[in-house]
Length: 330
Ligand code: TRP
Image 1 (cartoon, rainbow, N blue to C red):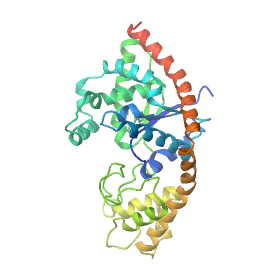
Image 2: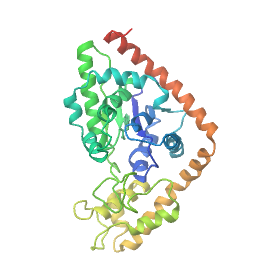
Image 3: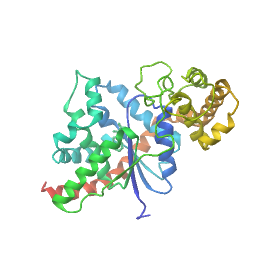
Image 4: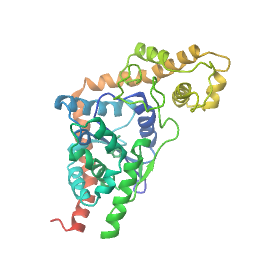
C-alpha cells in the first residue's frame, strides 16, 4: 500500500463536462485507481480566476463531483475532494508564488489565451494560477499527473519550481511526471475538428456534453464535419473530422483504429456516424442514470466531499508543515 505511486489530478469546476473530458481524463482516472494511490480534486479555486456566478460555481462543483463518481471513481479507493475545503492548497500556493518567477508565468500559454479572452479582467490570480496548481500537485507528493496536452506546460513548471525549492532547502518535494494518455488524449470538436472539444466552445453542435440526451448525441454526431472522400480511414491531416470520430469509437469500444477501418470498409459515413452515436449513447447510459441519482442526493454528495477533504487534508498537512519548517514560517 505504502509504495503505490501517487496520482494527483483535477478538473475545474466550470460548466458541464464533455465527452472529451470523459474519454481523455475520466476513463483514465477510473482505470488508474486500482494500481495507484489516486487523488482527484475539483479545482474550484482555480475557477475563480474568471468571474463566476456564486450559485453556479457551487452547483458546478457538485456536478463535477457527481460526474467523477458516476464515471466510476470510487470514493473508497480514491481520495475525491474539493480544493477550497483543503486549506493547505491556498497556503502552499502563496509560498510557491514566492518561488515562481514572473518570467516563467509570462510564458504560460494558458495565461496568454485567457488574458486575450478576458481582456477586461486580467487579474493576479489568473497570472499566478500555475503556482496554485503546482501546490495542488506537490502537496500530495504526486509521482504522476495525468492531464491533457494543454496542461503539460503547467506540470513542467511545477517540476521546475519543485527542483528549485529542493535545491534551496534540501529534499522536500517529489518531482512529478506529466502523463498524457495516448488514446483519446485529444478529442476534437465535431464542427471544428482542428481544436480540442471544449465546454466553452461557442460553435453549435461542436461539443457533446455528458448530460446530453441520446437524441442530442445522435443529432450532433450526424451533423459532425467529415469530408467528401466517403472512406473511413485514419488521416488526421487530411481527414480530421473522420479521424476524430474514429478515435471516439475506438476508445469507447476498446479496439484499434485499424479495427475501426476494417469494420467500416465499404460503408459510407451515414452508417459510420450512426454506429459512433450509438456507441456513445450506450457508453453514457449507465453514467446518466448514476449521475441523476447522485445529483438528487445532496446529502450523499456532502458526505463524500466532507470525508474526502479529511483524507486529503491529512496528506496535505504533512507536506505543508515540512515546507513551513524549511522556509522558516512559524
Ligand atoms: N489547470 C487544470 C485545468 O484547467 C485543472 C487543475 C488544477 C489541475 N489543479 C490541477 C490539473 C492539478 C492537474 C493537477 O484543466
